[in-house]
Length: 100
Image (tube, rainbow, N blue to C red):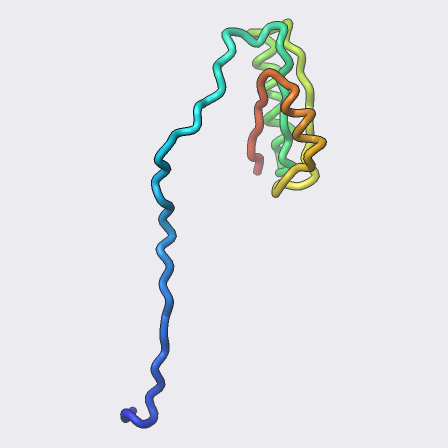
């Protein structure tokens, strides 16, 4: 190719790294026990997550027989309606998982 027939192209390159956060979000305080507490189990609709969360409940009930469990299922893996999240927020602790 000579200079008359060549075409110049611009390629834009994006840097995918995120800026480092200056402040850290505080973690929720840890419960000393789940007995007498409400534990939410949040299903994200992926395959086998129900099986996994059911097993988590079985194992937790062995150690915390007085815990109450509530099962929630999102409409899709990508998000949940505000009403559902308000119900989940009423729990003392929440377990969620990604199935497959």
